[in-house]
Amino acid sequence: MLRIMDRLTRAAAVLKRSLFLSSRNFHATTCRLSENIDKTQEALLEEPLIMVDEYDCVKGYETKRDCHLKKNILEFGMLHRAFSVFLFNKKGELLLQQRSNEKITFPGYITNSCCSHPLHNESELEEYGHLGIRRAAKRRLSYELGIPDSEISLEDLRFLTRIHYRAGSDKIWGEHEMDYVFFMQKDVTLEPRANEVKRCWYVSEKQVQELLQKATEDSNVLVTPWFKMIAHHFLSKWWASLNDLSQFENDREIHRMPGIPTPILQL
Image (cartoon, rainbow, N blue to C red; front, side, top):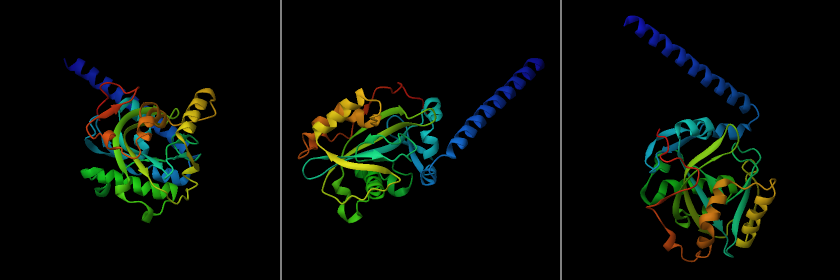
């Protein structure tokens, strides 16, 4: 019996050592990659993001870096909160942006007006009326697009629904998000931050459809997976109802996009 226990102990030690070396090698790989990462974007990787389960219940926090490592997403099912803002002008045109080439995930991709994350702090964790995520969205609209704080209010951000999706960016990075979708219609001043946004412009619905079609035909036209999913499943009917979106406000349902394991791995 003692001999068997000794063998099991030694086997466990070997396995532990193997896992440690694997983890250390992976960490070394990401450290080498970080040498080529923009310093501002690298600093943002230390932000604390809100970890949730598949029902959007808060489970704690992890750094932006850990949340976006594909290894953590695939092996541990790490899921975090995010938001996507669709900003329309008074003419009913949608603001698109092309993400900066300095972005960690999906650099240079075309996407909706503003996409980011609420942080794990008292202000942005507040659940009532989605106030926490509204504050985060307002913060990022100012930071990314340079919209003056005085030009937008929390009430301007109209919550519609939540979307759960998963997507890979490259061999190292990916997304696994509980994405809160907000619409806003207002004429605003834009002064994009070059480190975040390569360019931004307003488009009609027809132009969005043409862009998405072109992306299927030309591999050089890059569109983020979450924008493609939202455009394919929801955008047209929402856009047609800009003047009255109340019928689409859905706080009860979480839309699961293709590619989500059922059930997802728990934290």
